[in-house]
Image 1 (cartoon, rainbow, N blue to C red):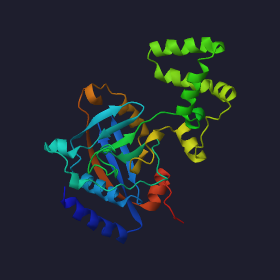
Image 2 (cartoon, one colour):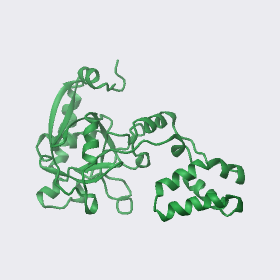
Image 3 (cartoon, rainbow, N blue to C red):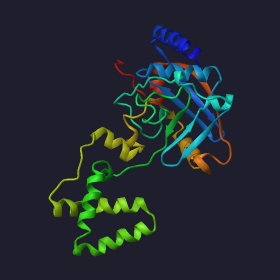
Image 4 (cartoon, rainbow, N blue to C red):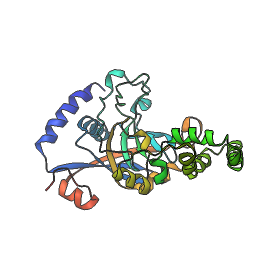
Length: 279
């Protein structure tokens, strides 16, 4: 993959020579096709992805990790080559504030912060967000403060019935229902303890995550370098396949890619994407 560094530099020069065109990448799967657009604001990731797609290195790789309501991950070129990724091939993080983990976001996989504090990206593995729709209360509440407050309130005799509800849900191991019950009783905590458990949340983000959905807890931690502009329903299809250990699909699910150059005006018209500073 060291050759990719040279390819990336050449690609950046070529891209700067033609500002009127961009690229759409089609990801082919047995469950349907997705078309993705790559952001100019993340040039290292964009060119690396394009070159892997163009050269056919992504072809016959697998969706190897799938978690419904979270993400679908694939593109492990090294697995196909029966090799291990070299740390020197990792891509510097290009985390941009305005690119969020909404459904359809294309982002780079990476190792955890313990061994990768600089948040460098894998040189090939990527994931596409499936995510879930969030309620406004979920996004605008400090869950840690709320849970702490709920625990304090449940020690009060007058909330014995509420305590039993939490006990029943805990026995059923229904964590999501427990969180929803806590959110439903947010006002009790604020009234009894005289505190606020609310937190600020960007209005535009709030609208995106309560309508389209996504995985907001990943924002600022991973490089988002593109998005699906056609085929969001295919993400649903892939996310719903049966998986086994390590969230690996029981039946192998392969992918291949095709790159198409297209005038930016046509991309904007066809897919509704508005380029920054476009007239």
